[in-house]
Amino acid sequence: MVPPNLQPLIENRKHPGPWPGWTPGVEQDQAPGNERDAYLLQFELHDGLQGIGFGDRAGWKIGCTTPVMQKFMSIDHPCSGGVMESRVHFDHFVGAYSDFNRVGVECEIAVTLAADLPPKDTPYVIQDLIPTIQSCRAAMKIVDDRYADYSSLSTEDMIVDDFFQSACVLGPEVMNWQETDLAEIRGRTMINGTEIGSGQGADIMGHPLNALAWLANNLIELDRHLLAGEFVLLGSMVECQWLSPGDAVEMQIFGLGQVTAEFAK
Image 1 (spheres, rainbow, N blue to C red):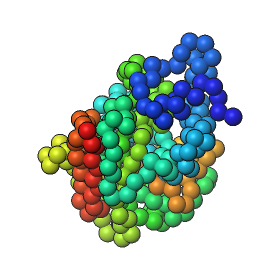
Image 2: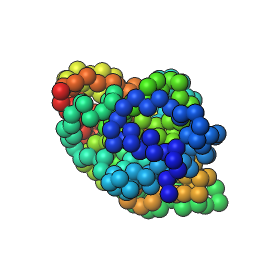
Image 3: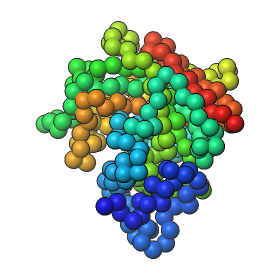
């Protein structure tokens, strides 16, 4: 059974609006006291979203893996969330701006796993991960600021609610991804045909696969682990861009492809 304090968050996913934070009483009493508790509540939230038709958790997103996003959020370490199956789109997304409370986009590299990453004697490092990756691809993370004032919320509060996650757009899989130096790869955000910002793979924790290692190890600490077939969004190379009605967005990851989205008025 989903805890009562998660019901407002579940409703806010169905009908995004400015969530004010935990209300005094039961909700506030059950608010997470630390990040471990926040992640455990997040997993229960995923169960609740599945129960209202969002589908299974298909993958994961990692936030605050680059200096630009850590500065943007005033958080100095990575945080992760789930991506539900019904919110995964491929190549191109068309939606209404009004379907969101305040929609933003982020420029990402996504990896899909070919093997589970179960607990082991030592923490995962890049060398452990390379044989387990099926593909890489360009991706767009679609986030939603569905809060009255996110700056007033704690990191734990945002972790519970999947750290702004709303949806994503995945480009075609690149199976020969090892021919590309992920640390040197460049990505850029285009809005209405104008480049808004750019970054490179090394901005993501020194190497994008360091973010994957962080997630693999963090989930193991939470008695979970990554599974074959899941995808992971490794973090935005470009500062999150908040959109306006009618905006058309393109994310380009040179060497991996591109994805596009339109947010109709």
